[in-house]
Length: 251
Image (cartoon, rainbow, N blue to C red; front, side):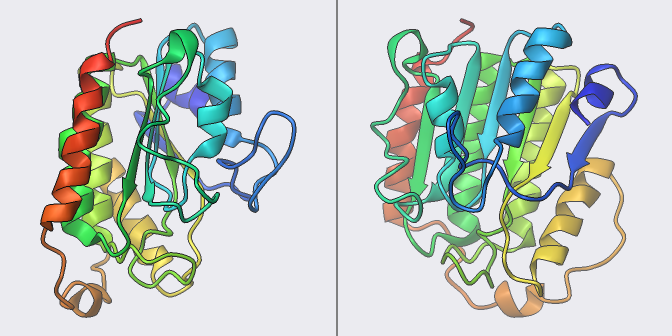
């Protein structure tokens, strides 16, 4: 999929792969993950496809620890993880984890409080993810696309609806259009609700393709529960992380 996007065969792409990969470390698998699919795509693009500067955005509900470990010292790869605070791995993905050595500042964690919902995710996308990508100006954007922040997921409690995933997708699409000739690849990660994941996945792929096929039949329920507006404590966390965006620039 990455090759097809880079060589222009397709405008963007969604790799529906299994198993997930974003927890996998260079020396071992972890948390349902065996090989870090996104990391492999990054190094392949750099080694074989002539792409130097790549951004990884991880919106799986669990911290993207694999990318942080693999690229933490590498300023050619920006890693941004939007996740539920300390959900998995334990005590991983803290705001203070910002990369090391030459890579300091190129790892950004947004550990959102439990129960953040659409408003907090949308604010994080617009205040941190979008500006960080604009500052870094990647030549290719890769997304670790987990649907486990969804409102019915049994392994987390972020309660995000299809509206939140649409905003996230629009954010990375806009960034890819600005600096990467639209080159954008989403790679499937987690998501454990057989009822709601299909709607979240469809909404995301519809946004990528610019078409609409089917309404979210569950949105009137999960979207109508209340609590989707941005809360002060969520805003405070995002605003704190946003201060780190000033350290992101062309390496």
